[in-house]
Image (tube, rainbow, N blue to C red; front, side):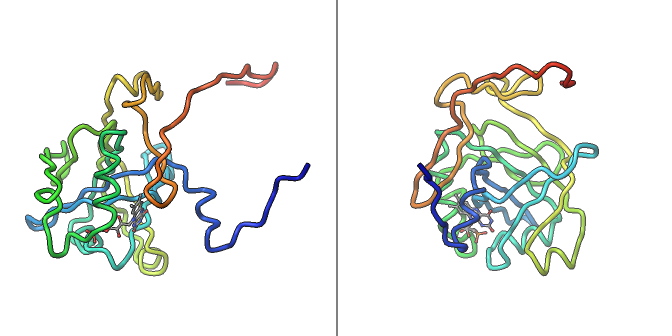
Amino acid sequence: MNHLHDVALEKAYRLLNHGPVTLVTFEHEGAGNVMAASWVMPLDFDPPKLALVLDRNTYSRGLLEGSGTFVINLPGRQQAELTLAVGSCSGQAQDKFAQFGIAAQRAKVIQAPIVPGCLAYLECRVIEEPGVQARYDLFVAEVLAAYADERAFSKGRWHFPDDELRTLHYSAGGTFYPTGNPFTVTMPAGVDD
Ligand SMILES: Cc1cc2nc3c(=O)[nH]c(=O)nc-3n(C[C@H](O)[C@H](O)[C@H](O)COP(=O)(O)O)c2cc1C
């Protein structure tokens, strides 16, 4: 039986939208902010780079263009409501840290707040690509520091020991999926790991 059905092209991004949802934090000239971002992806190993799509209409965009730095915070179940909230309102007219009771801590190597209790953090500095930024709202950045909750990520791998310590995937309409249970397959003979 064929279960494939056509997906409206304007919804096609949702087929790829399962990377862990993130909270992105910024600071420029004393003003801080936090927003949600799903459109984040790794780009290179060494030096480590990632890409972030950041809408030109957000308040965060000005902070990012001003400071050239940001932190990717990886929320778990405890931060799901917060993720939806900070991704649904603007920091232009309000301090989201105060409004949502976020006791922000400081990033390690850049001047920015981080959201406490997240599973991992990547501190980033933008590599200027003005044409790409202007045309596609896409920011390429080098990862300057990374740290993670050792209960969930150790020896270079995620473990997700329990429901609270799993990254989240945002679908739509307030629905999140926690990263699921693992299974392991055997490498075919003759293929290097
Ligand atoms: C789960 C979720 C994921 C989101 N992903 C992105 C994203 O990848 N890029 C983006 O520009 N906006 C994204 N948004 C929307 C921003 O978080 C939203 O516009 C936010 O209000 C911007 O805040 P600001 O105006 O304070 O910067 C997302 C929102 C949610 C709820």
